[in-house]
Length: 255
Image 1 (tube, one colour):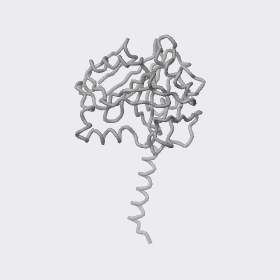
Image 2 (spheres, helix red, strand yellow):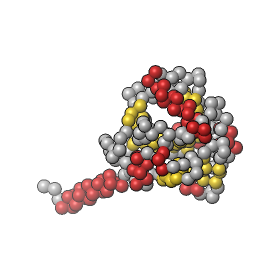
Image 3 (cartoon, rainbow, N blue to C red):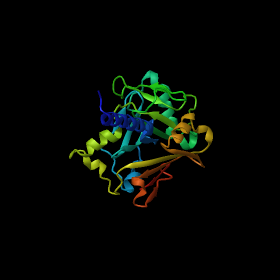
């Protein structure tokens, strides 16, 4: 027979587990990307502000793009660009064209911005909005990105869920302990962690239904203004410093 004390401890454990489950967010912001021009000259603006660019250039075979990243301990910022030397698969022709249109966002009106989320133990099997899945040659076999922006909202901001089972936070914290890899996390400006994202859209009709869900769960914020803008806070703005990268990039960073 279980003793009263043991029973109470077991009951308290169940309550704690239930509370942890309730408090666990359904998703976590993982990283953000901006589509820029071929050759990525926009990287110079980030380097002038004291950010190191990670040494690896990421090829997205099948998608026709490449990217470079600014790595933080719990995520990264990514500059993605069309690259003619990267092959495009027949199934992703429309997606590759969309990236080309996004890279000319000032002319086309397409959003150049994307926010990618990581799954958590509380991620639901289904969301209260439609999603769709995409796979490409550059992804790990058997994985996919779950896109939370409807296909027919071609000019909207891209919201999606990462194809990786492990969050960037987990993988980057491990890399930062590697003496051969840690240098890319040591930005001369002192920035170390992503702590908030805000997306400004030029009109409400380019914010997908999933944006309301993301906002309601306190994952990030969205608002409407005069132009596309990614507003990022690092380290909770501890340094009291703000860098405005416009017009080169639709980006403001507080750190």
